[in-house]
Length: 65
Image 1 (spheres, rainbow, N blue to C red):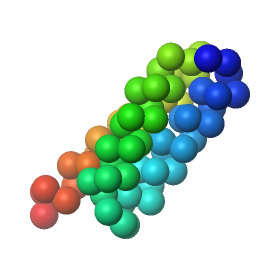
Image 2 (cartoon, helix red, strand yellow):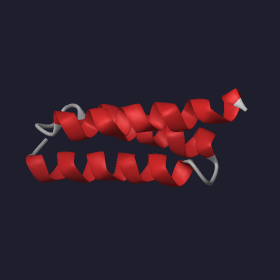
Image 3 (cartoon, one colour):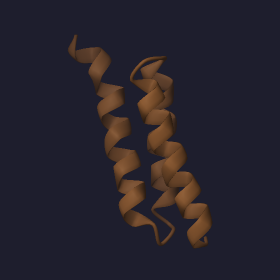
Image 4 (cartoon, rainbow, N blue to C red):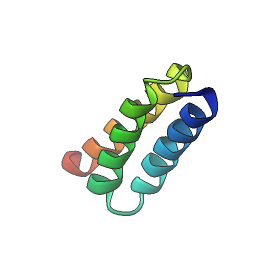
């Protein structure tokens, strides 16, 4: 996987997590985790970990309230 693909996967995962804060957090949080984990196969590890972390937070927030 090349650098550009890793950047796209990371940013799409982060975008999915941010949108998931407001709309269907379970589905978009799951999508963000999946995109982030796939992105870990690229050189963009930091961006992928941010996507995974934000997505996990998005996934957990509905259960806290």
